[in-house]
Length: 347
Image (tube, rainbow, N blue to C red):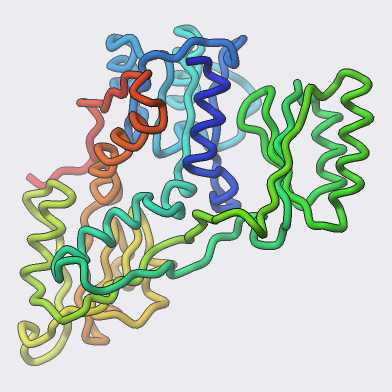
């Protein structure tokens, strides 16, 4: 399958517009002629370290999906001094594009946070419900139309898009998504017609967002079980879901912590203290929390489960693999890294 088609399908599955504004998502490393690159082996990892990249090369991967973006900070030179730049250089040398969905995969329906929420709902045989803690910041929340433009988008063309629409982003060198409201639609269409006549745009598609089903969710999840359960049941559930032997637990500062039942759980994969602690819940679940955040939650009579950052995310790759196999009609081999692990371990 051509890389440009892979990117298009990925964005349908996990719209990059769901990502948080601070995030760095999409195609982060793009070797020459990436659009026409044939993709037969996609390599999945939570973190793209140098050993993991070498594993991908040895397994003949020709496309990498790294949940965490290996490139984040801006830089003015490209050299061997920085780990992230060494990774980018080696990927380009081996003609392997690197793509990251990160916070978009947290927000989307069926993504990482829903995976955790559904695992917890199994405690009451699926009886209960979950909702996003924070609605997504994506542009479609204020836009009525999405326009997909197929062109070799130059800086000047992207600059014109920015003047005419609510938001734009590019998922490859030839595909740009624009979000606009009804008042902007006529102007952008007239502009695209002119650019088509000049040969700068090949063609474009318009989606009416007000009539389209949305898979928009948001960050974090607040899970409400149909009936309360014991904390030991929750701990066992999370250990099995995350495939961990141990998790760290903070207990409520009450006379008899064992009397505290769990019915509401505020959760976020990765690092979620800024988000989950804004909700009233019996239990706070995430990958990492600050010391004083834990003290405060326990002082208020709540349980806390902390599992280390990537431990709360990595297990989802097995689910994502199945989703991708279905997305690509089993025409692409999906490989999960065997060397990708959390940098911390309990000894």
